Length: 223
Length: 273
Image: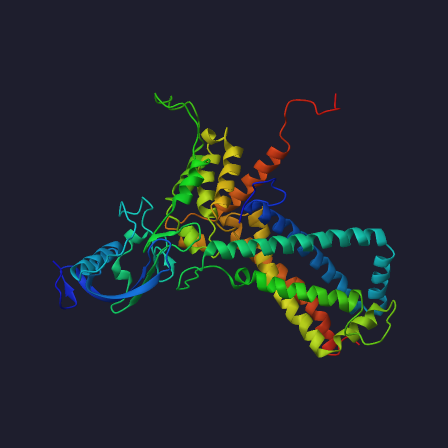
């Protein structure tokens, strides 16, 4: 693959791509935590979550700034992810006949795959709850986000897809969050273990927070 | 001398091994060849075992296996075999030449392969072309000083901690095990070690940014992959270089890019008078 014969903008250096990956990942990791925290209002009842949704819709400028940042981050993250994966496959040249992995974690080795499933999830999720085009039947929920979510998760297939996707998000975050520190040069042997622990905890907190809602609907705790 | 029969002699126990060794000519596809080797003393090094195999092949009138080796005392970085999938074999922090046969079992099958990476094409059998590393060094792995008479010893003061850190990075022998162990064929541990070695010393400061950008550019052009923080390189490095050097390389690269981007030309811009 020809590299950086032109300006560094059209084909960034290896570390440049990693920095794009890290910064876009940081935006997305921050977003999922905020999104999860907002979702937990489901447990406070219909008024709380519907008021929160209304508040968001009453601030379209802020909402669209956030959306544009998110869309740019997703595009940048996927673009560099594809470049990195293809270049790395080519550079490996097949690898040894015997596999003797010593240290690479499952999460680090499955990043492209968990990423692809998460992309499929994001597309479905936007069609489902943002655009309300799929898996909601003919019902018009209007401003009643609470009823829409409860109805959406009343289908076990949909709920299980959400839960599995969030477990993959946990896997993705546990490698991604610790990699952000490494790529930005903010990690050393003394901090490595602690940062890995923080990343794993972050992944689980986000995933379990999200999972609690479809699970609560499936178990009948939220009606 | 080694007795041909029996399980022990003055060398201690001996091993009988089934060896699957990679056979390849330059530019052609390769394959594994199987050989049996008996009476290998457990005190032999892995390279001495390979010598025994080659002597056996010569006696049988067959082609020997080409492999790289030089100092055989673990400091030159020449030996380069992937043994049972592990560059430099099963012992951490050890080169192939310092790996001894007592670490293998009698009757074991051992798979021996060259370094596998696009940037390290196979020359013959187990020997690969590692000149990509030389190109990386040539592009910035040096400091520019006037040679000749020795400088005054205390002219440039180096704090002990900095000297130690630079020495840790300078331990890298450039063998390429990091590339061979990396699932991305990335050379970041090597480049990180070489850049850190010079970038933290006072003598390395004048060329710090230029060195970092040039070495990373050469690394990319050589066809190495990108680091995705697997950590396999550290786990297989015969000198136990840590991922710290990669974090610091990332930091130095970012710093060099920012400094380059906002560098001053010393002249006012057009219309800026």
